[in-house]
Image (cartoon, rainbow, N blue to C red; front, top):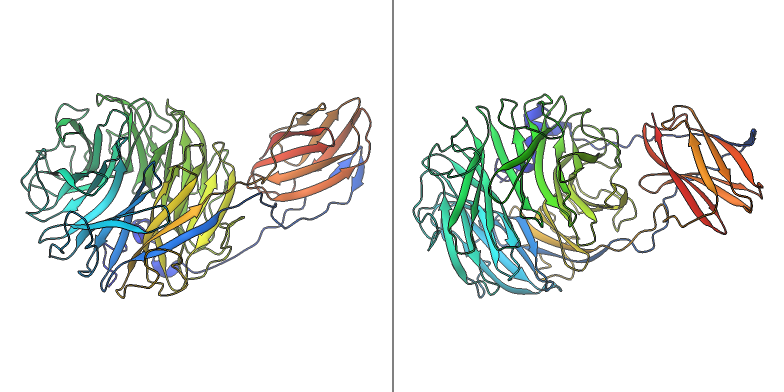
Length: 596
């Protein structure tokens, strides 16, 4: 049965925006771009090119597995360790799974239990466990420290079988957040409730290089939450919270985060300097943004938010991220250079994209991805979506600085490029896209079958592999080469998909070239002047690419001599960023072109 819990992330943006799910119907309108190239004032016939650039090595499906039994099962969190093992967590109503070599081999009772499973790089299960009591228990987030210990965060209303040797061993009331630490063999080290007498939820966990662990979530409790942090008083209604513990489970500090409106955390991440980032959604009633990219509420009911704290819990900066409609921050990740990435979903046609892959709103609801530097200045931002709707934007960054965006889509357009599934198969499929650090898409792919598949988490492994989890009701043509290739039998099964990332040429890397290339005006509205000077330049090729690697025009120019000028018509192209490239036997040179 599709309860509000199971469809929460799928439908939240549309419910908040007043858009019914029945509006999510497939569509595929096209766009014709028809620039003209003129060399030395002589028109040259443009050569249309609708095919994508060839890949050196795009993504490949390594394996995919169901994880589920006779009732509903939902995958919500992933973490990969340095040895190539991968952990999947979520929640289950099934009493016939998760009973091999783990902490709790028997279903705890109640509506649902958390599950946690460890697999090796080939997808073989190593151990698994339930985690729960006689109430309901949800698993939302995972993190691994440098010693290989695993932290699991979630939400529970069970009064027993949760806490042991932790900060708070007694259930606070209503529902509480929880945090539990396991070693690599699945042995519990300690566990704690986190909550007061109101409703409290744990939605994110992260670790730093010193072995400290951060629990994030949201709360309606006015006591039992904050201590020695940025905001020690509950703002009102529902606040986000952030709590720091050492490796032994001792709380070091904790803070509310919110004003007198409604704030909700969804994700937390740390960087290499010990800073911690909190993301979520917020109403525009104060106490949110300060010294960041966007200090004013954009509009609608909610904006996404992103806040940075240092290791002592002192806020460094914070920003709204949103436009005139609803915008929800779902996920945050950092790279090795101190940059931070925010992902989520948006209904806004403004304040989202800048110098990114997709500058225009696709329609209904899009995923979004934005990059900020350590000081909170936005580097670029992009929509990701087609005409029919995307949900649950999740972000991960690998060791090479590649950025991955995953989610769920109903759209038949603007999703796939150089992937292993180039068409929507069900009414909803998951999507996965890779970007370089400059925001250029390297590839994008669907994955799914009939009827429905929902993505809720993404993680990057140590060797360029990417993992996506969620839940599916696709009975066939989904799992392959994994631990469980047969659907478990309930309304939904959890799943885990492993993708090998590959490499792409896309718009091929530029090499040193003797000619000097100049363009003007840039930004350009109608006609771009391209001037190339080189005393020894022989025959060359002028190319225009979209930022995702689509070759829009290609013109051969035979032996132009020491200098030549070309006019590139930009009429008919959408506003955004393009890549102009001049190639010869000696090498290549290029310029970024901005179309107004």
